[in-house]
Length: 95
Image 1: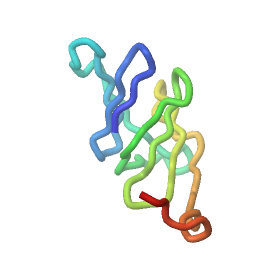
Image 2: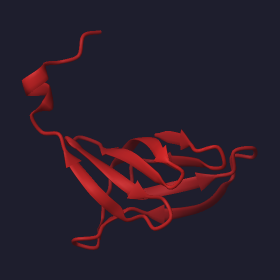
Image 3: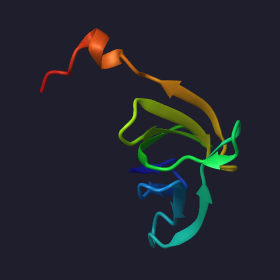
């Protein structure tokens, strides 16, 4: 996934890392591992991401029904939203 907050591009590669790129050169400036603060373990398979404010993103965890809310300054996944059953209850989206 890829997201832009007006000052930095954040990219996922399917691992636990968020990569921060310069929006002009697309050179990597830094990276940070996303972790679960309850277990202190990394959260891997980060996929599609969207900024919800200047320093937080929502990221889905590929092959799960979980979306995590991540502080891009620390990598801490402050909230995990388990959406298990949403498609069962509301059906598949129409094309």
